[in-house]
Length: 120
Image (tube, rainbow, N blue to C red; front, side, top):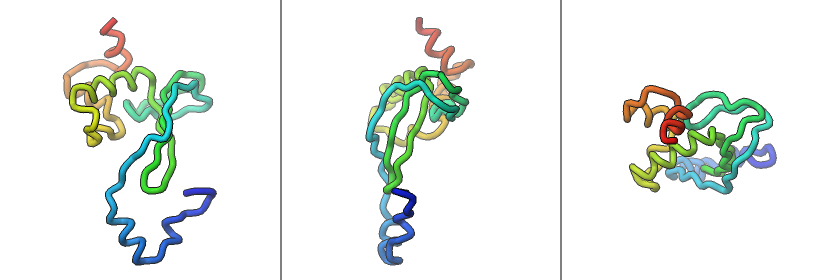
């Protein structure tokens, strides 16, 4: 939705059907480390990121929509480790809760923060 206008709704019926058939592709517009100003849900572990906590923010676009994803900085580290093992272009892995799922797969019994700290 851009400027409060749902552009999809404005498409003619034939164009809408063609638009629905297009496989979506997520594009990261920007990425940076921030201190969050309000609570967010972490994309990696699905836990809350509290106001004042450091986080990684990605601004993405997909099928004409622009949105932001927030992740704990330690979840971001675990996700990049996961991608380095399975391949950086393996986008099927990048789903909500992917960090928690990865830790479950490798049979690590702890939080993403504990996983990152165990390497120190």
